[in-house]
Amino acid sequence: MNNECTIIYIDDEEINVKIFEIKMSKKFNVLTGFSGADGLKLLETHDTIKVVLTDLRMPGMSGIEFITIASEKYKNLKFFLLTGFEITQEIQQLLDTNSNTSYFAKPLNMQEIELAINAIIAE
Image (tube, rainbow, N blue to C red; front, side, top):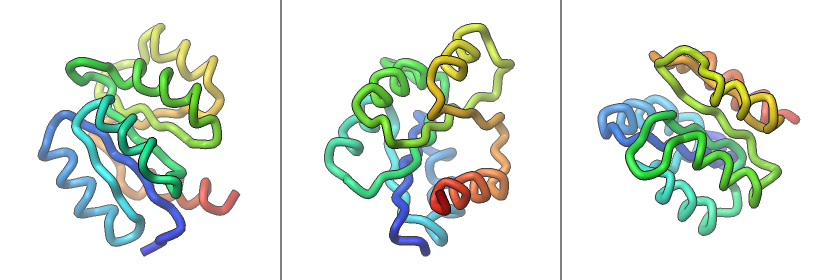
């Protein structure tokens, strides 16, 4: 496990959180949450976070809203928006205006995510 890199995974669907945690906790320190509010709390209380992955559609605060808020305060982090939907104008605008944000399509390709995280660690 790479203890130097802590990642946050946020999704309102518990099964997705568990699957991600099981697969990635062997390689990284994984913190999880079920909402944008959980993600903001995790960011406030952990200083080793380098990567944040968040689902697009969640009740209360969308992934876009979460990234917009979090990226203002935590400019050194890399954010990934996770979506099973087509790239909308709203998503494209986020990607265009926030250079620290990318996206992954669902269903998630864990190898692709691991490679992206490792590339961030290597920077």
